[in-house]
Length: 572
Image (cartoon, rainbow, N blue to C red; front, top):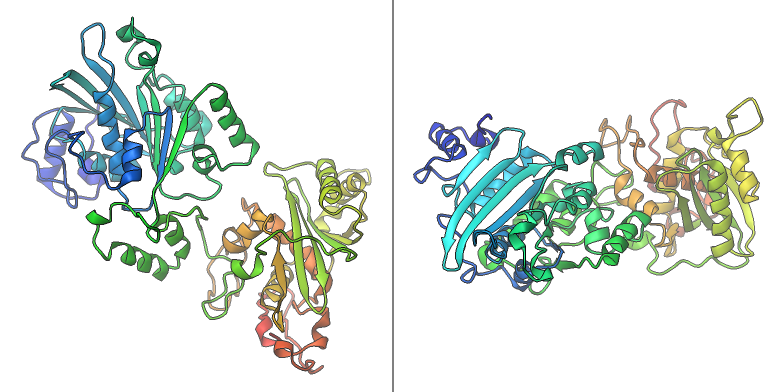
């Protein structure tokens, strides 16, 4: 089995430390080894009673023996230390073996990759458990084990910590986790582990040591296994939010939570306060400028959304690019506090509905109302997470209209032109199937052709329109995917000409929100010219002033040229 070049993996070029690491892997004495830079490594085993926790939430998590526990906190909150130290505490409380009187305990500490384990998790482990004590074994790309056997006033303890990476795909996880037998499983940075590690991991805990070691004990002492999770605030769609925190409303997470509850499995969630909340933990061990520096650095890099998650400990979005509708600091485009209604947006009685459709297996619909001179009120969205066939989509659209818009007249339904293409020799199209199932007359949206630029322009025009305090865009808060897309997920696929957006196109592959945004674009084109101006632009001028001069026109350039209409150039 090959030795682990620990310090090469951590980017440390020091021959003495590399030699010490090799000796540690071989189980030799490394007491005199130089410490890893930046770490305050432990020199003795943890003292359960003398430990000063970073705060009451972390302490409650530390002592929690529920079947499944989770802790979410900001960076620097001490949650990782509390998590790892709690494994030692659990070992000391393990029932003694009736065979030889030893407390046998094993924890599998899991990350997605071995590089993650060596970059952060194992160095954090060394701050809790002395690396020079016991024996290290393992190899690059394989599980790594720290085995310590020690005596306490209450008897001997056999402690094993196994560091494992299970991969990302369900098949890979299933293959790697099969055969694992452990007392506890600890998911560090749990949100970065796939949910399959959690669900399959539950079948591998409470399997070490063999039950023969507990023969004769009362039932409650013969089962001693726990799944523990620590993590920063993740994306709102992450499985930890839906399962550990019980905030999920989707069928998959609901089934997991129900199955656990039916079996009497106890889940406890602990949330540490964010930096801006009373009781923020571990501040006594951080510099006064720690969080201000983190905030300043993230915002300087344009990652303000990370401040919400990593500093203020609020569930949010993980951004993977430059949002199409971000705008600039001086002239923002999509502003959630401005464009998302604070309460449910009831449709206005007696005013007709308009619907936009994006075709395909991952089709989407947006339902709204238009009010002159230029305001779009978007009331609802429809989409299937895992896709749907046209008849199923049409039936769902019919049900949505009956439930939320009963008795209201649909003025027009406009769909992606591609939906009118025949799928076979028969006269069958996506549009015709949706039309038949929903009972709606659907027309293709031909304005602007099938170019993306006109659809982007109408969204920008609605976001920036103001007429004596009336916003051009108001969205019902139930339109979660639309909000997420406009604010975060709908990003530029390339960075050509960032200052002008020339040559840039949105990333659409794998972006579910793109379908809803396209559907809204087809609907909104019904009140816009190809350059993004509303048809009613001649009614008002700049900021509600006099009408625009008839001679003002926008040079659109060639059809295939880049498209970047700025409504501010024409009206407020």
